[in-house]
View 1 (spheres, rainbow, N blue to C red):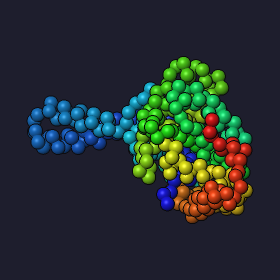
View 2 (view 1 turned 90 degrees about the horizontal axis):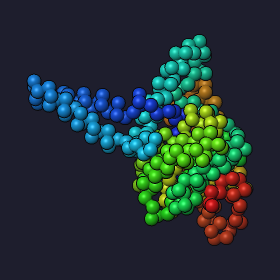
View 3 (view 1 turned 45 degrees about the horizontal axis):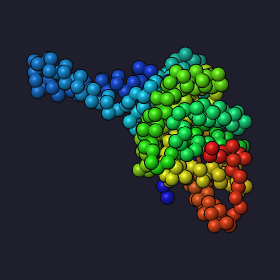
View 4 (view 1 turned 180 degrees about the vertical axis):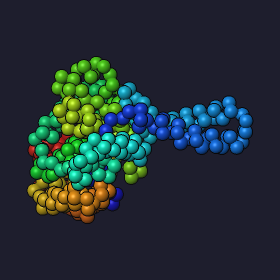
Length: 334
């Protein structure tokens, strides 16, 4: 069985603003031109103009293959490239914070290059913000072609602690290209008219960064309303995921959410909450890295995956009663 990102917010914590210091163009130019310069200096000693020309061409090719700009959004070429940009910014922020707060106890500072694992249980706020995000997204022209907007991940489950990052999944008909649909949303969200029409209730919803990649061999689009923008808007950080409606990446997320919303999933939901709380304490006290925090949840997540898929099979056979999963706020069909 393919493993989806069961708790999507774990993969996009604390993403910060994208600026020229994080621009792949800047990093690409530094790395690529160094290689180009050494290579072409050896090949064309004394021909400075040719060296400069090749440096420029190499950098352009790297930049072109690394990201694209759609409206005001930077779209990286892969999940790994997105992480590189994000983590670079987090390291800068952590260094600045630690330098400014030199007298603060080490255990209270950000660890792992800027990550801060902080769990909350604020379902009413998250549910309210999800309604705002959905309202704004449905005003995008391309929303008419979507299948659904699904609220997924831990924040969609009442009484389950989670990092304060909302995950929404836009499911698409198979006839629509996932990556192009993601890029189109980025362009539409940059349109001044849409910004004007939604600003009154979103206080400035924006998606300045994202990526176009694959997961489990299936196309995956991603856009982010990052923490810094969410804080200014008094909203919750939000990730937008794009998948085809029948992709296993999409169906697994929905099945797991529905199971945890049902009475049959209460035991595993409570176990999952307990595991996360214990891991949070270990991280806060310096006994655990952010990577190990995610690894520490793998066991219970595998249990949830197995039980939820069996639950869905039994449900399809009529062995268990249908559950009104919309009552928990998770249903995204519209």
